Image (tube, rainbow, N blue to C red):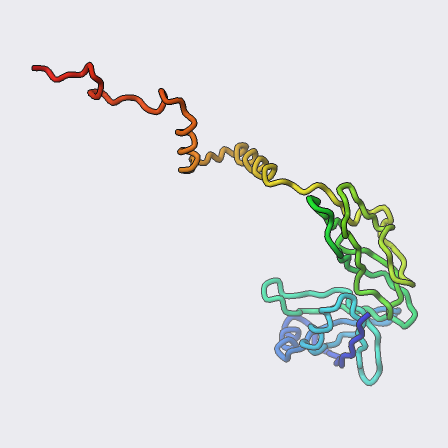
Length: 232
């Protein structure tokens, strides 16, 4: 797993105004708690923290007042529009301690031809040592046939990591791929249900004319028949 060292500063100002001032200084307000200690309010360098959080379950070594604290990100708040870090909750951990975390599931390979592979579980909850948390697990679907199902219990985990997710939880499901004709039929049915009617294209109109019997090709206009003669 990844371990990143960051210098943390204690903070004594709280509230939205104080948080905005901290962010203007390119820092991120955070709170550190766990192991029966009182919550400690700190600020962290924004750019370094942003880079560190790109790694899932990154272990942070915080240099706080000359002492080191190991911590894991617990809750990350971002601006919903701009995406910058607004606040981070960190939980204190100890070396050798086991914690429950979520790790990502990554599919490797491709299913057999004309199959559709669905990842039903994006993550798995596992128990691992705080200093040995895997960044994720790979699940091979190479050549998987229609009907293949991979459950949580089938996923190979690294040594020292224990599955917490329900062992019977479906992780990967392989089904027959939908054909273009089936997609068009489903779309036409959905459109018919809501009353959508499409005008025939020029190609469709031409095809209808070619398929029609010769006698139905058109009706003679008045005055064009032999029996219509001018009066003398």
